[in-house]
Length: 316
Ligand SMILES: Nc1ncnc2c1ncn2[C@@H]1O[C@H](COP(=O)(O)OP(=O)(O)OP(=O)(O)O)[C@@H](O)[C@H]1O
Image (cartoon, rainbow, N blue to C red; front, top):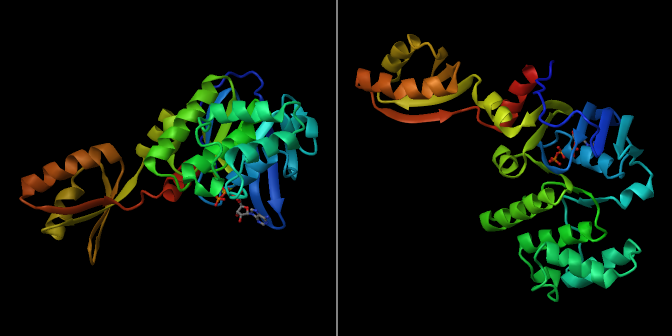
């Protein structure tokens, strides 16, 4: 298995966060396999399907988990069992574990006290301002929308003004408006010089926020670089389309001559067409059908799931 590592856009200088040949296993399960990556100020997306190892990577960065092999450092200092480093990072976990009866201000202030900050109330106020939650700060968290709860959790993670912010699937369960709001917030923090890493299994989500993307699949770094290059890697690749038409057999015969078609199978419910190039095939198909007087009823890429895209990236 080879990894398609794209020429990263990041400078070659040492990153704020560095993973060097990091692996992590749980018993027989290898969750993270020999990952080396650098994070720099700005927003980076950690993209991967479920179970890829994203949470494990974030938890090792945050010092919650020890690497089984390799090192995870922030500014050159190992994160594992290093409380001094925790002052410089904030983690927003995937699962919520916040008492709903607290107001946003009480919760963020409690976090400031836990960090032993000299002025917890002032720090909470600044963090709530940053995430634009001051207007609702006296309301109980259980009355909030998902987006408001997430922003409150971000405020809590930022209350001690860390330079590094890690977020595990921060957009999960949000509606489009809440998602937009969270994206603006991450953009703003990135522009302010924070080093931000957020995980997601949705490419569209990642490319709207992050300039750089690290793709992990089955515990390995499958690709890294500018999101446009990642997208190109994903689209300029073989695709299988499920095609139904008014005359599948005749369409199959006509498609055999098309150079972007690598293979066709006639199935009970239509054709499975393997196209060597997504763009050329989707342009050629309507033309061929029209020439043949065949009506297209359905054209669906049947392997659009991220899993298949990722396995392609890993096949190299
Ligand atoms: N405590 C654990 N014990 C055993 N296996 C674990 C443990 N935590 C994670 N794993 C396994 O390690 C692999 C990576 O899990 P991880 O949670 O890091 O992935 P993920 O990309 O965050 O996925 P998801 O988005 O589904 O949480 C998975 O196969 C998972 O089942």
